[in-house]
Length: 142
Ligand code: FES
Image (cartoon, rainbow, N blue to C red):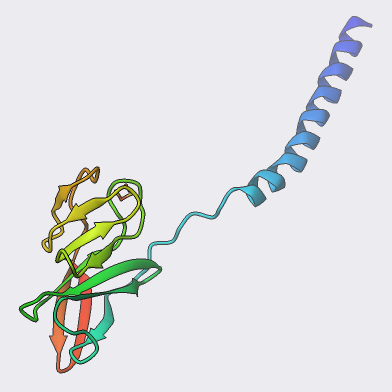
């Protein structure tokens, strides 16, 4: 008798556990965001020579992520992923200081992407710039 009751309790407990799992699993899957797919991007046209004047910056999409291209005062280009290395805010180019700036906590990077003041703990992730006629393309660093 005791064994039959124990078996019945075990079966009911297992059924309740299976039912709870079948209800909770879809709810948890719905609430959790899907894993971010890394964009399979090799080269992106970021700008053109005529679009950007010297000492200016532009945010563009590198795959699904924001990137920043800067045309220095001497006319050369440099590009970085635009995500601040402190807490992931989007950085921007400050023409008045000729630096890359994160408005969230007043962090600054120089035009090599090196963190120079404020809380950012490391440099920006650099990208490579390639010229093709009037077009300016950006690729990942090899
Ligand atoms: S997120 Fe950029 S300085 Fe804090």
